[in-house]
Amino acid sequence: MNIYRLYLSFAILLFSNVCSAQNPIIQTKFTADPAPLVYKDTVFLYMSHDEDDAFGFKMQNWLLYTSTDLVNWTDHGEVASLKDFKWVPYDNGAWAPQCVARNGKFYLYCPMPNGVGIGVLVADSPYGPFKDPIGKPLIKNSTDDIDPTVLIDDDGQAYLYWGNPNLYYVKLNEDMVSYSGEIIKDASIAKVKEQADRFHYQEGPWAFKRGKHYYMAYASTCCPEGIGYAMSDSPAGPWEYKGSIMDGDRRSSGNHPGIIDYKGKSYVFGFNYAISKKLYSRHSERRSVCLAELTYNPDGTIQKLPFWSESGVKQLGTLNPYKRVEAETIAYSEGLKTNEAVEWENDSPWNKGRKIAERTFVSSINNGDYIKVRGADFSQGTSSIVVSVAPLYSGKIEIHTDKIDGPLVGTIVIDASGEGDKWRTVTTPVKSIKGVHDLFFVFYGKNDLFNFDWWQFNK
Ligand code: FUB
Image 1 (cartoon, rainbow, N blue to C red):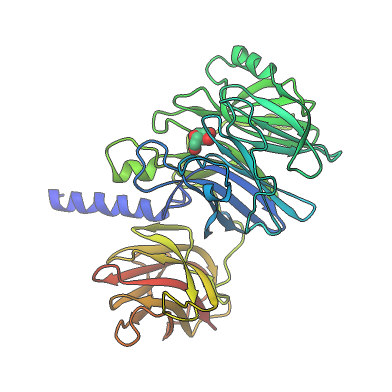
Image 2: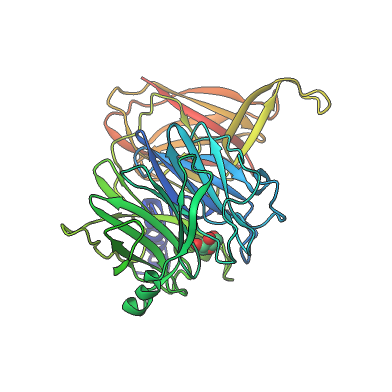
């Protein structure tokens, strides 16, 4: 084999690996501190957000993604920000949140480091808007006040835990925005320190109950951080160290668990630095959330996982391509960003008129970038596709099935002439597709081609 062919087969191997990757689950932004909430049939994934130009922590808001199959994730943009807390004195410090549902309301617990405190926001919907009901920190106890997690016990008593490097807890009142009794510094987690040696409690607690067991998963022993866990017979502890869910790994100085059961399986979320490392040589806090399936033993203990795999988890069910699918519903992508915009009745900056729509859409589309969507069920065949785009420059979208260079189903031509960057729909005939297929939307043209809002196949 000559050197050119060797290089080519290596490049193809590398590319096909990237195209089959599922971890990190979000590629358009840097995300960290995953806090999943299962509500009705959907996983709502609240996360903190590392800015694209972060070196140390640069975190100003919290993001929301949703999924019903755990491989295609829909971006809902910023769900809350430091600006929602009038008492927060800075614009950098939106650390690890958690959202819990109770009595039809959604409570987002948000820590602001360096002794500023833990705040709480409330909404009537998991999508927000979230408002600060108390106008002050819910917890302002010490400089350990970060990383809140909430457990609601079967008797309705809610517990708020938090802290780095110590674990604290307090009983929340039923309103979820105030507490009763003393803040307790948990002594047993310090014991975990002795028992666990290498994998003791550092931060990022994630409290939950499963069957009769209470669990406290956590980011262990910085640095590198792994994911450890302790168990108890009571929400108030004492906690007994049970093992490592994932050992720390030199590839990731941090980690941070979020654990759920969903559709009969169990999952752990956390993060690595894979995308940042691919793009930049210098270490920076630009993290990326990952996901793995978790297995419990019959006695409730948890089987240890290897470090985050690139392949991620299996899709649960299929995606319906005959319903409008937001373009920011993505299993994997390269080169793209997402953006949010409010559309007003009038173009004039002085009199904008009514708010017509709020959109999240795919942006920064350049030649060769692609979106991969997993497992669309085409059992009813296809005749055409409609896309909603706002062209900046003319270009085209090729739709391939199963591989980035798999069968070409159709080519959508986007013409930038006419109404400039106004949103419009373009309908294009496509070849007949049957069965379940992954889709690749591959973009061609000059630079910053168009913004892409949604797509939908016609039978
Ligand atoms: O993301 C900021 C902080 O880093 C979190 O609050 C910690 O858990 C660590 O992940």
